[in-house]
Image (tube, rainbow, N blue to C red; front, side, top):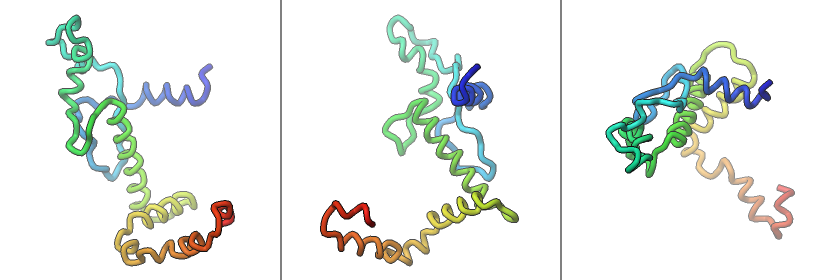
Length: 151
């Protein structure tokens, strides 16, 4: 029997859809879209390359052609793409929860409040440093780093 984390990983690999041919992640949609799930994809191979000469480009050349490095990145790989698309997926969940009207459970409400507080740039700019001024004053009053635990 598979242990729970291994079972979850196995299920996510088996049941998540494979996104083929996407270059960069799309902006979050109202409905969160499951992230890119790497898998064995024969179209990721570049069969025009001789594997005895350059096995890496033989095995990965097709993927590289379909997934060029985005302009805001210094490199791009399956893992960086998966990481970015997971962030986009989580952002979509937050956006969807924030746009939901009606009854919300306590946890969803707290998440939405926290998210709204972090994305309300107008209020953040208006308040400026006043939001953390009390904590900064307490730091200034410290006579030793040993007292930091008391903050």
